[in-house]
Length: 317
Image (cartoon, rainbow, N blue to C red; front, side, top):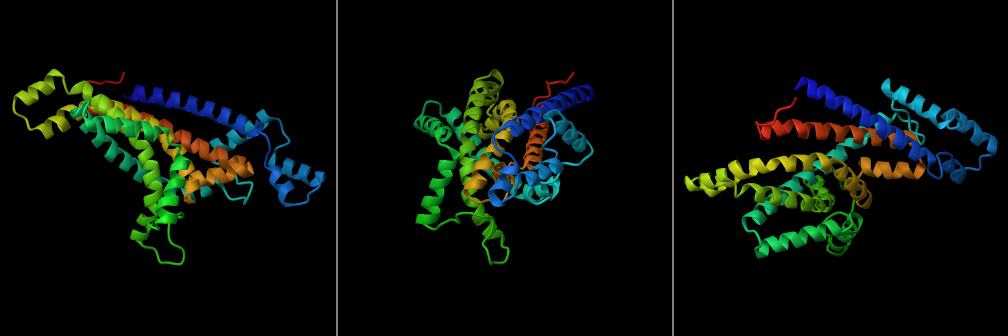
């Protein structure tokens, strides 16, 4: 186990280095730059822009800029925002709770609905319910998240007035848990329902593989209650692809949160990333990308380790 962990951590470190190199190069080679916001908001001359570029280190060759940034990152210095000079880690820490709240609530909704629909679809294969679930999953995968969010706001906020159109809480009112949950309904519904489709399809596929295995037939022949057969014998052995999906869905969750937070004006890391992208705030963009990459690497490692918990036959060499 220890050797396996060391090997996976080394592989994760190599992947992280590759992500930083590619992201750093793409951001700096993209059209525009941090100096563009100065030319749009002020009447600075060429000398002033050259001075600012020198202070930010943007006049140096790209490999030199990357080496300086990577060295500071290893030392624990993630840089400062070009917009407000705040430390990047402080900005991320301020917005991380909102994103975590949205992602966890959406993931719980997706798992709850998706696993239940997948189990019922496998138990009632080729039934009307199964066909409807399959059609709904295909439709869910085809609908763009931003369009779904806009329709949600138009119908349930603007037309019916059932949910708020944005933000985390009602302005001018004291904090209330019910008010916070009320504001969560819109973005969580959009992000959660988009993620239901993969969970339902993976669950259905995994359940169909094990429902007709000999040990499941034996359990039924012994008179084991049907719910116990499904949960303890079938579902547990169908969990391995679901664990893989959980690790893979971390970047999907962040990508969905990026769009959802922007549509619903949710003050989290996704909206912060979009705002920083418009300003070409390189330190903030790199900080969010690195933080997300670390989460994905650790999430996949955790999913691999949970394989042995679900299936004791799995051993790590």
